[in-house]
Length: 236
Image 1 (cartoon, one colour):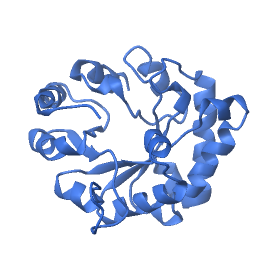
Image 2: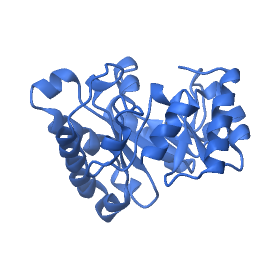
Image 3: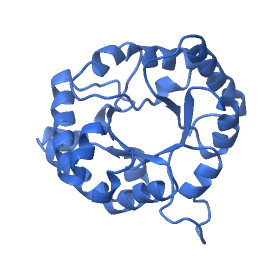
Image 4: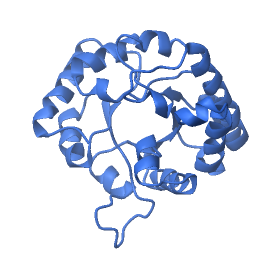
């Protein structure tokens, strides 16, 4: 819940920097819904994609305040985040709800980014892998595989706290996610990027992005300023 019209200048600055010196990575910005259409306009023709932060599972109907995947696509989105830890915690979203949203994204022609991750209590109890792989099983439909999608691993306890798992912990969870994906979507698991999303910043991006099975980053606060986000993009 960050960003006003004045902040579109940051998106423009990012696109201009990547036009001058392209990066070897796909880059997308997922602004609040109020900025999606104007940001898509600002970024039109650039290397930067736009996406939504959430969508409703239904295409339309009496759902005041909600936004469908079709509406996001109409506003210029190419991707959408579903099942973010804050949606799961603040809005009580279950794996079933996340799965329905991911399928809705597919229906609308969007690429879903499905988020999974454990809490600090679950990590301390030694349940991190079982929680995350259980979320994969519950949140990803077996039919999701034919078209592109991504998974984002969010260690919930690391978001906004400054805490970061060790590289070994990150690699362990990402490897478990890869195995769980193979069980759900078969061969499509090989080409599905697994993003890391826990307090990624310029200072730690290169190390994290170099870890085994880390195929990108889902960046939070460090994406609000073009200069910071650009350092992370180039770190990959």
